[in-house]
Length: 96
Image (cartoon, rainbow, N blue to C red; front, side, top):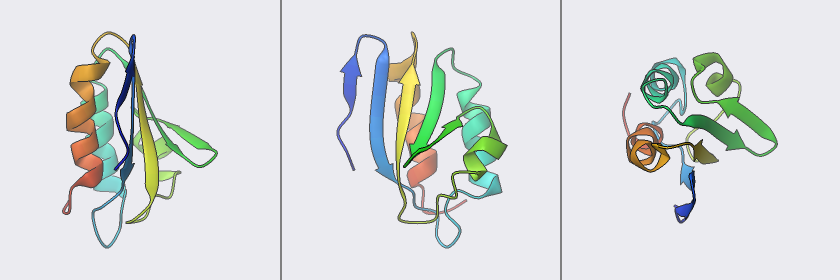
């Protein structure tokens, strides 16, 4: 896993998607988006050149993040530091 970088109101972490055998499929994408909507910060997830709105399960699914895929979680806003750990936990969980 990558380091967390905190700069003002921006927090980023690179993680490896777990959840074998499907990775970021509908259930975890929906859970991630629902949790993200509970925070005031902007939430995005990056995979290569693709960027997904973390509040949209459909956007997250379009990343096609299979198990072992490296993604970057980017949070910007006043509660970004509080939101990071619970959101990352969904991506790195070994079950759905």
